[in-house]
Length: 368
Image 1 (cartoon, rainbow, N blue to C red):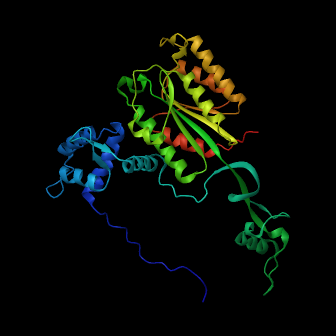
Image 2: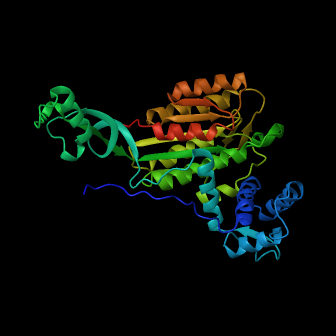
Image 3: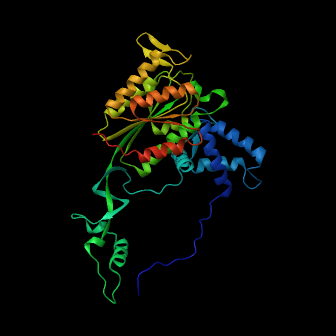
C-alpha cells in the first residue's frame, strides 16, 4: 500500500461565548484608542451598546465585565476603588490583535530571520532554483523538478529511465542575518490636530511590529522610542498607554537616541523607522529649548540633515513614514532621504502598517 493522506470533514471550533467574544473585540479596540483607560473604554462600549444593541437579556454588560475579570484581562485598581486596569494578558492580546489587523494572520516560523542577497551554504531554503553544482547537499536536490527535467531531456524508453547530473535541480540556500531596528514615533501635539487621530494607528503599527518580531524574527532586536520636545525609550508593554503630549517635534533628539541604541547592537543589519506627521521644530540647547513652528527653520533643519548624514556613514538606513502630504514637508523629507540614502513613504494612515511590514521584511542590505 502506498503512503498517502487521509482527509476528513473539518468542523470549526465552537466559540466558548459568542456574546463575550464579539464585545471583547470591540473592547480591545477601544482600549487602544483610550490609551489603556478601562473606565473610558467601558463607557464608550456602553454607548455603542445603546446605539447598536450589542448585548441582550441573556448576556449584558455586567456579565461582560465579570468575564473580563475572571479571564484575567482586567483587575481592580487598588489605589482607586471601583476602577480597573488592564493586565499583562490584555497588553499581549492588544499586540496580537494589532498584528492580525494590520499584517494578517502570520504563521509562526521556527527560526524566522531576515535573508540576505548572498546565496550559498546557508540554513534556510529560498524559492530560487538552479542547476546542481559540486558541493550542493542531497537535501537541496528537488526530486520532482529533477525527474521532470530527465523526462523532457531524455524521454522514456520502455522501462529504462535515465537521470544525469545535468537534470538535477536544486533549491538555493540563503544566509540569514539578524536585524536591529529602532522605531521612532512622533508624539508631538500635531499628531491629534485637525480632528484626526494619528497616534492610535501609529502605536497600533508599533505593537504589530513588536509582535511580528517576537513571533517571526525572534533573533532580531526592536527598540521603540518616542520623541516630542525630548526623546526617550519605552518598553513594548507601554505602547497601549502611549499618548500625545503638548510637545514640539525634536527629530534631532530622536535620531541621536536611535543611533546611540544601534551603536550598542552587534548585528550586521541596522535600520531606523520614523513615523511622523510634521516637520522638525525643536532643539535642546544648554540654555533650554530652541523652538520655531513657523516654516522650516534652517537651524533645526541643518542639525537634522547632519544626523541623516551621520547615519549614512554608520550604514544605518532611515525609512521615513510621513503621514502628512504638505508639499513643503515633502521637499524636506526628500532632501533628508537623499542625504541618508534611505527611503521615504507618504502614507495614509490606512496603509501605514502594510508599508512598514513590507519594508521590514524586504530590508536585506548587509553592512560591511
